[in-house]
Each structure stands twice: as C-alpha cells, then as structure tokens.
Length: 272
Image 1 (cartoon, helix red, strand yellow):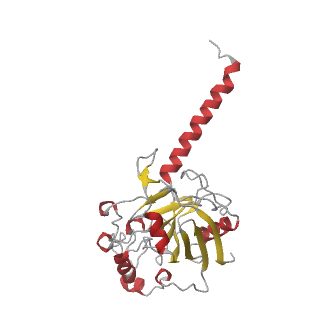
Image 2: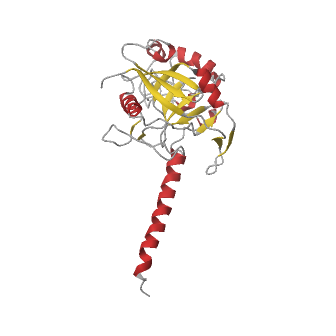
Image 3: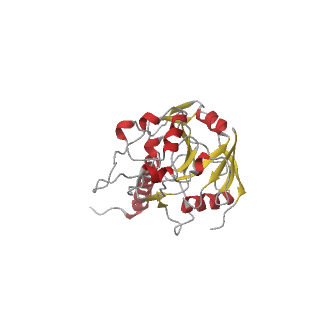
C-alpha cells in the first residue's frame, strides 16, 4: 500500500527529532573527562626499542624531563602566557593560559571569551574530588563550538610540560583524535594522587605536585591549556555544591543549584 503523502512530513519530523536526541546524547556522554581508578590508567612505559617514554609516547629520559620549564608550578604570568579571570556567581577564578604549548585551545578559548560565548554557562557537571565542567551554553553537555581549525573540532594538544595537577584547566573531548572545542573543566581534586601515577615518565616536580591533588589518569588524553593562579577556593566551593543524579547517565554530578559564569575578563591577551 502506498504511503499517504500528507503523513510524510510528520514522519520525517518525528525522525528528525529522534535523530537530534540521539546525537545530543552521544555528545553528552562523549564530552566528559573520565573519572577512573589506577587499574584503567595508561601503562605504556617504553617504545618497541625499550626506550622509556613520556606522556606523548616519545623517547625521553627522566633527566631530560627534569630539565623542562614547568609553567604550571609558578603563579607568575610569563611573557609567553596570557591571563583571564573567569567571573562566576561563586567568585572569581584567575587563570594563566599557555598559547605556546596549546595554541589551538587557547586561541579558541580567548576568541569565544571575547564573544561572550561563556556568559551564563553553568557548571553543569560537578564531581567533588575530581573536576568541575562548563563551556556549553545549553548547560546540558551536548553543545560545543570551535572558531579555529576552519570552525571544526581540533586535535588534543599534548605537552611534556603540562599535566592534570590540581587547578589545571583542560578541554573535554569525545575520546576521538580531533574532538576538542569549547567545553572545559578545572581539575579540583586535593587528594594525594602520587600513588596513582601511571608508569610513563613525568618530571619529578610534577610527581611531587600530584601529592597536592590532581588527576593523573587524564594525562595524555586531554589538552591542558591553563592553570588556576588564584581562586581555587572558588573552584572548591563549586565542587562542594549539592548534586543529584543526572537524568540521562545516572551519574551523581548534576548541581541542585548550579553556579554559572557571569563573564570572562581577558587580563593579558595574546596575538596569534
């Protein structure tokens, strides 16, 4: 029997709604840094030739890593760094950015900040002793935006100088090679994580920093592009807010009363 043509638009409309919902759910589940224990951490320690490796998989020695400049360990904003103030309903968070080490991430973030893209974004995913996540105007974790890489999501930028220590500013992604965009999170954990370091090499000072908190299992999988230099008390306050189960995933991460970004002030800009 032939389909009555007058019903066709309704069927296509319903199909379109279902498709949008499915795509939205896939994005929501994908753009989330994974909270994992030490059993799921990266264990690659050597190349095929037996050489020790760092988080980017390159041959490296502990001595060479220990000679690296580690900008996250200083609160001073260097000449090759930018600075922003994320203004929130819970207080202000000052962050220095690393345009030389994560150029796509920083350019995308600064450009969107100047466009007020982040204004009124909620911290829609909050997990105490892990991280707080935002960067999606829909406040559902299903949206993102890129204004670099021809307006397409871009590659994860990994540096032996940057790690997910406490206060790190990192980009969420879907787990695919080119899926970073506007969603970001601030690592909040203050627990001693030194016993959970995966076995690839890191600078000794970074290993020591993990005693003060962070999430080492994220290293090598997410772009670190900034570091909180003041306002970690605000991050802790947001992370300590009451949460309920997310209606989609069941994860205890949806704030009962979400704090939000009221503005992002560019204190020190960077020209790309």
